[in-house]
Image (cartoon, rainbow, N blue to C red; front, side, top):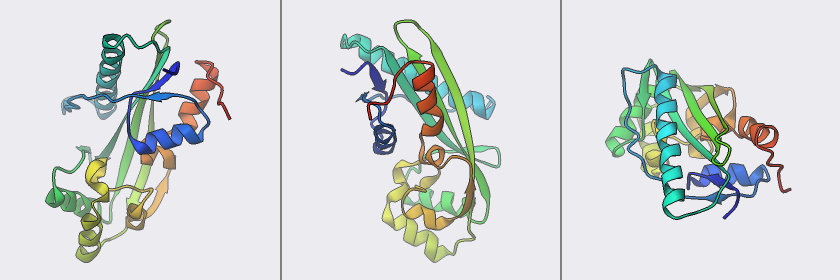
Length: 198
């Protein structure tokens, strides 16, 4: 196992970390990702990310896997003060896209990187703004039928067909995808001494 572990099997996160030139192992984790609506939005997302970190540590310990540094991340879409998670079904997906139509929302990704041997830890929350176009019902139905957004917070993927829903965005594109590599790569290099392999 690599000294660097990505606690996610998201193809998008794996691809972004690979393209940045890092050697790592990807592991599966499972958490409830329950939202405490009484918490500040940033505290909410950090809480979920910490749940993922604990799950990753438990998984590694249970299998006696030796890894020095773990990366965990969680991405949320926040609209008018509310958290929009992954759609439960196609009707829910349609409802989310309809709410976002013509409006702006924030995409936030919390990242925690931790050296399990030294206990050194760095956390960061990256925020980007996305403005949707005014969408017709036909456009909404056509996109929902693709199924692209069913496994994504906010029910869309900006890196795919979902880009057609967007008028403009401000901030990190990789953050909107779910993994702000522009922030993560420098932290890995300077704070945890993981130079890219390429």
